[in-house]
Length: 103
Length: 94
Image 1: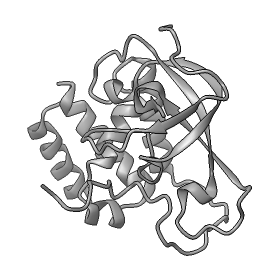
Image 2: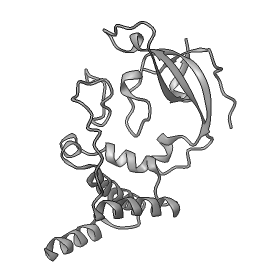
Image 3: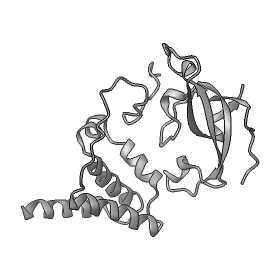
C-alpha cells in the first residue's frame, strides 16, 4: 500500500503556487494545427475530450511539468490514435524521424 | 436519464477514493461534505469515455456547495463557499 493516496501530477487544486499569469498571448501555427486536429478527430468520433485528458494525465510528472500546453496535446493525440488502432507506434516513430531529418 | 438520487438541499459526502484512470472529481474535495445546490443534467460518464467506452447510461451531475472552512484546514471566513460539479457515482448520503 502507498501511504499517500495517489494524486495525479495535474491535480493541483489547493497546493501552494505562485500568482496566475493573466497575460494574453498569440498561438503559433503548429498550436492551431494541433487544436484543429483535436476538433476534427472529435467530429469524426475518433477522440473524446476525456480520452485526451486521460492521456495528458498519464504523462510522467517530469514530462508533464516540462512540456508546454499544446506539446501535451500532441503527445496525447498520438497516444489516442495508437490506442484506437489508427496508427502504429512504428509508423509514428518513422514519421517523427522523418520530420527530425527535415531540419 | 437515470433517476437522480439526490435533491437540492440534501447533504452529501464525496467518496474518499483514489482510483486510477481519468477522474473529474478534484483530489482536494474527496471526503468532504457539502449540500446539493442543483442538478445540472446527466452526461455520459467521462471516466468511461476516457477509456473509449460509451459512458452510458448518462450519469446525473450535481453542483455541490461546500463551506470553504470545511475544505481547507486553516480557512478564516466561516461563510465563504466553494461549488464543485460532481457526478452522482462519487456522492453518498451522509
